[in-house]
Length: 404
Image (tube, rainbow, N blue to C red; front, side, top):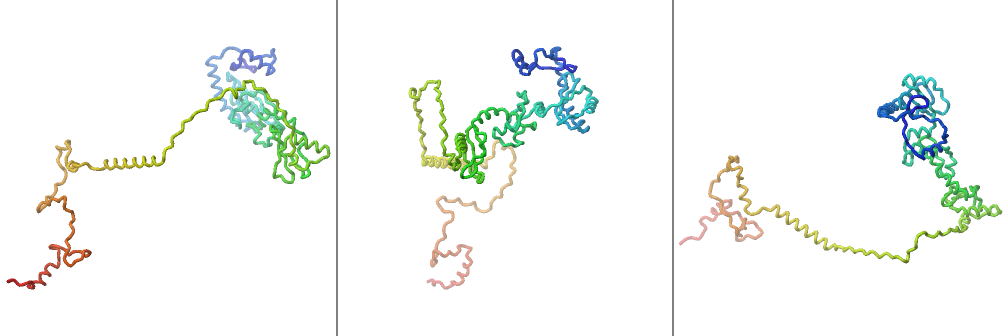
């Protein structure tokens, strides 16, 4: 596709058929307007060349910002766009006033060796070209579907009872959000029933001041100017009635009295349902549910105790040694039958062999009691271990009964 400023650019088909005529009418393009002619269909080499120059745009934008700052110009380079054949480069910039960039164009032409075009855009157009995410979590409206930018002022926020906070009402572009105009017409239609001069109500209890308005609930919240601790929600019809009393020269006693005024009943026309009423014709059967059996706690405890006893018995049988296993310890495996025994030889015991233990005889028999000794006192040592044995023989020698 041939460009108006010379050279060739690559276009993309986005609409066809009757939608093209409607879109041209919406953009206010005259039928006899001169459009860029289509030369031919782009081939692979054209698309490769376009990808090459698109990859250079970020680096060129950084260098362009450095050059603009070096020349001390009050402007900001927002975006750079190359033509399809790479012969021309368009620099989009934002500035508060008029900028003399003649020297800047010469520096760009000397640096980048292409034809230079400078185009000034607004802050909203800059955000549309860059893109991003808004506070709502979605992609910016200006970069997706919003084609026309309408002026947004703080009156739109006042109609919707929003706090005039610049940080919350501003978008990524630094201007008021475009979405403030989306519901503005609905709020204006709903506010037609509200009184215009109802910011203050004079009562016998004191002056009442309007704090906020709930448009869709048709409520107006008032509080006393001297004591602002309590809020009184008043219906729109109650406020109208209080204003009529003030015009007649009467003054309401307090906000409680205005709140006690019953608003006129709202007549709501009942619309006939477009479906047949089968309330008493069809009855659904009652769903039967099976009751769950409750498990007794005593049964659970007995099962738990039985499981613990069974587990303990298994552990005892696992760790117990079966009979005849003691002789198997000294038995050498068949695989080691031919190997020499490396254990040290045991020393042979001297003396008679140990006596076999009688199964019915206790291991440590109790000592026999002596005459004249109590059961609580220990018995004297027996056998050769008694030190008084020789002394007893010496003391009683020759004192025994005489023979014959």
